[in-house]
Length: 640
Image 1 (spheres, rainbow, N blue to C red):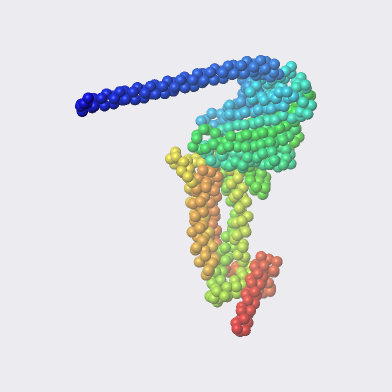
Image 2 (cartoon, one colour):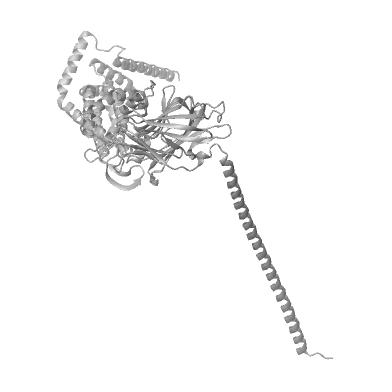
């Protein structure tokens, strides 16, 4: 049978359609099967999560029931029952709020009207930022007071007893404020708990943490004087670096009598009757830009003695008040325990020599003048006048020494012309020293009197920023002499200068430029040859110092800048007065007369024991060494 072409094409199309349909059906079935498998997996995962969450909730519920059952049998069950509440005690100077939670002081306010915060209210040292946690080790269960609730007992105006129920006994903290003082007593004792503690228990731990509030306007300046400070049993006061540097147990050599959380003008000082064994001190500095209202966060961990039988209480005291030298000394006397705690050492007065100048001179002078009741700016000006009058004889001696060298300069120039060659420098120096010796002039006479004044300059640098009497006191355009006077304030911190311009600092720098110009001119008039050339090269370096002072002191106390400015101004006036009252002709005549007298008596050259004698001996020795070297070189050249 013959099959035509159309039949073949039709059969092929039918076969293609059939296979295509079968392929499509298979693909669709596979997709459907994959979707069903994915859905099954998703449902399984969801069911697994649901079962897991149900199991977790059941476990949490079971754990909670278990904790409740176990807690009900705990010796601290009653102490864990929420019992919020606060008790206020106060005296003439302090108002303290004591919280039931932790049985600790949660707020401390100074009632003295002379201590105001930046908004004009009373200074609050802390309000909820402090945590004073006591840790007791028991045989079977430990006590951590920060999460337990005390109950107040025997509450009065200036005293309260906080009681923590423990088993059949309790732990009590007796708080009592001493009259007219910044001291609060804290007596800690255990009652009826001899079986709770181990027979080896003889101490408890203290964890003290606090965020220190910014009380002053200058963040950086206040930070510089804020740190953890302590007093060791070896009568040594030490502190953490204000920039950090934590300390751990191995870093401490001795136990401590007291530990202080200090800011520039206020402190909380914890004092132990049985000393503290330090464990760890640390501090964290907050960033200025954060504007949290805090300077640093302090943490201190230590331990102290404890009698678990309750026969003797652990006596602690805490000073909550200003860093005022006289106030600290008076409050220490009020405690009456006979110990020399030296609480006033928390007021930093400088290195040992500087400290003694401030402690036994500046403090008494400053307290005497502040007792007059005048403006503190005037007190600083009068203080500057008294100091300048005290050092005026030294300043006059220094000036006259330079003036004598100035009138002898023509004779020194003749010696310089006599020895123009470089190899004759030693001979020139020797004859110059001999000239000064013959006329009774010492080149060092102008330097030593000025160096003697440096300790006073440094003493005031340490004294004024720590004088709380300046806090909040205004003078001229400065509204607070204890911090910077921001006559111009642009509100944005700029590296190196801050966010303001201090006018007193600018005036001080200008007075420093004036004094530098006068000093350079005075020294230039006494020098010749290479010395004069070197002086010209050094001048620009001297003029850079006021610029450095500006960037360093722009955020310093305006009272300190006021002192430096007025001191510099007085120095300019005194130098002008000395220059006007010094007749160079008469001075030269006096020197010539002295020269003739010394020549006639045969004492034209000073003894070797004097400064000029030693200088001249050194010059002669150097000249002899140079002569020997030249002769040695000549012999070597002749041999060649």
